[in-house]
Amino acid sequence: MASPSSDELLGTFVPIAVYWIYSGIYVMLGDLNQYRLHTKAEEETKNVVSKGTVVKGVLVQQAFQVAVSLLLFTFMSGDSGVLLPQPSFPVIILQFVVAMVVVDTWQYFMHRFMHINKFLYKHIHSKHHSLVVPYAFGALYNHPLEGLILDTIGGVLSFLISGMTPRTAIFFFSFATIKTVDDHCGLWLPGNLLHVFFNNNSAYHDIHHQLYGTKYNFSQPFFITWDKILGTHMPYSLEKRKEGGFEARPIKKID
Image 1 (cartoon, rainbow, N blue to C red):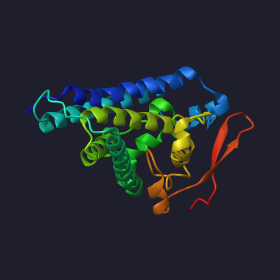
Image 2 (image 1 turned 30 degrees about the horizontal axis):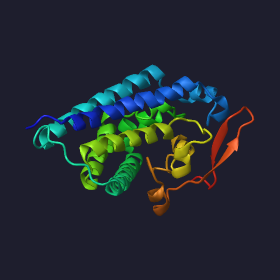
Image 3 (image 1 turned 180 degrees about the vertical axis):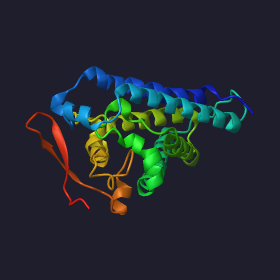
Image 4 (image 1 turned 30 degrees about the vertical axis):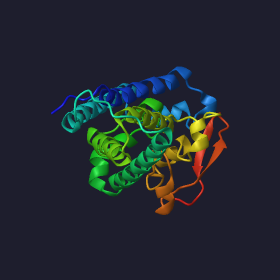
């Protein structure tokens, strides 16, 4: 067994730092009522867990994932300290795309299964849905087992199938973390480039978090392809509230 390389360690810890830095930026921006998808009153009444509990839950999950990742790297590492050469930039872009497709595919089917299976939803996935009104640092508020299944295993599969190096993985998983936080930020900010390039965004995922939307919009974190292919896509309209901010409303009839 070899010790994880510096790139493997960075790939484990940098996305965690990115999670708290990026979500912390949203906290520092304040309430931004003119851009919220729900009012502050809705957040306080609909969410059944405190923000302190959410922070603790995310830290527990991240600690669990670090332990699993380090154990995995310890057994998978080759010659300690030997850095793999970086491929050309076009190859890295291709690896990013492959990794995104792998993550989306894995998370769609696992996520949907956790909704279909009543036992898994009640005892595992419902923890995430206790945040009916999502906010940035609650993006990874999950049961540790869900974090292992969706995030850790999905991340390992995307890493192995895409063939990316540990150094490339630092950037990919940091980007995936930013995307996940952004999807849960509960805001529709003008000029958000992630909304320009991805239809899977904060409003799209907000539909899924509502009590009427748990049969729809399972896709995460990048594309909405599987929802469209398998009939779980719920389009929405984004309308201004008279109290300020926006509301994502489903367009199709809810079953």
